[in-house]
Length: 85
Image (cartoon, one colour):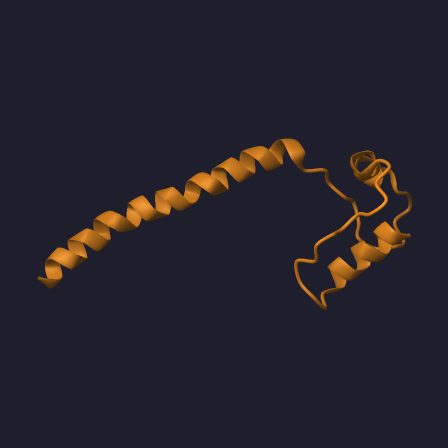
C-alpha cells in the first residue's frame, strides 16, 4: 500500500511544481514591461531623474500609499525618506 502512495506523490509533485511556476512566469513577463529601476535608495542620490516615472504614475494624487516589505531594514526606510523628500 505504501508504494502506491509513493507513486502518487512522485507523479503529483512535478504537476504541483509546474502549476506553481505558471504564476511566477506570468509575473516575470508582466514585470519585464512594468518595472522601473531606481538607482539608489539613499537620500544622497545626486538627482531624482530615476523617480520621474513614479512621479508620472502618481500624477495629481493627494494620497499615496507605499507598502513596506520588511520592517526595520535600512533600504525600505531609506527609500521612504527619499520618496518623502
